[in-house]
Length: 420
Image (cartoon, rainbow, N blue to C red; front, side, top):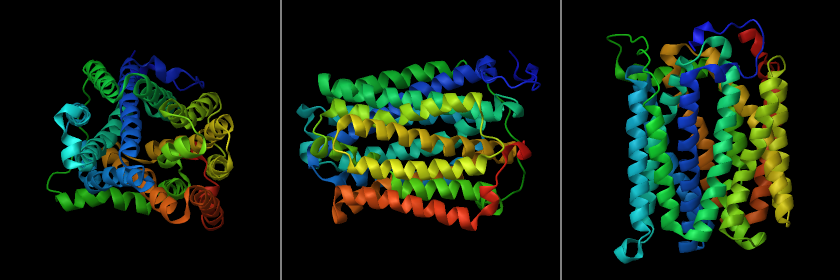
């Protein structure tokens, strides 16, 4: 079905799923996300087995974030200048190369870890960071070309749903395979999902290149995304709120420590804990697909981030595996409210020729919150202790919500229907 043949007369929660290329593209993202999430869990557990140091887990986040942020602006420029599908193919292949190296490091007979320690693993994580830096803006920009404007909110919701279902499957599958079959089989499974995803991407039709201003200097193009975001209070506000909330409130990087030392479960339990926030996000996505948060988007945004912070504080205090699982599910439900509102606002407010560069700026905010947040969690746990550091992070999240609600009234009153 041609995307332009779908009429915006009536809200249809499943309208965007009728677009063939969108379905194919979302399936590609589904399998790549499973692979990314599996690899993140495998590397984290493997690193903790090698070092038994929470700071080493934080350094994994830093090793991925620094090259990701360093290349993000050029990655956005590339997404607005070159064939977006081709970029996605090449950098998925680069990620696949990194996974192959991790597989080789896990073969004890080669003696690579014994000879060089965990340093080569950090190098591969850096390669993965560069790969994901180029993938994200091209994926966001190409997705917007696959559908008409009136389906952006619907697409954001289903995109979030598919991503989170994959993010549930990835950690759970990674933990089970690692626990029962070992690290090498786990890495081979990651390679399988990457190759399956690439085979699907080839069936997505190419889209025309966006408009390009001839004669514009590279420095101007690299900085134009930053200028666009910082001049738009809504985009800057939603990205900043999410960045600082997750930067301080995220506890995912420390889950291997909670798993081993607090809840006393193995890698299988870690897989379920990693998947729990994603399960909550899927549940919330299904609700928001039928009842999109359009009119009172700003209010829902504040409630979602505050609820995320409270859930993380309660998780830190839990000593029961099932209660911890429930609280992480709750954190994912609250967090996904802000994810959908932010991605919808970004699609509605960004012209097509700027999508890659604006997405790259958003990637910098996301990288700062997730990967650098992992490093912050590791340092805080080292200095303050595991549980006090997570409680402190949750309280900081609540403080940031209060500050934003008071000093950003326009964001608090955000109405996405007026933008649309």
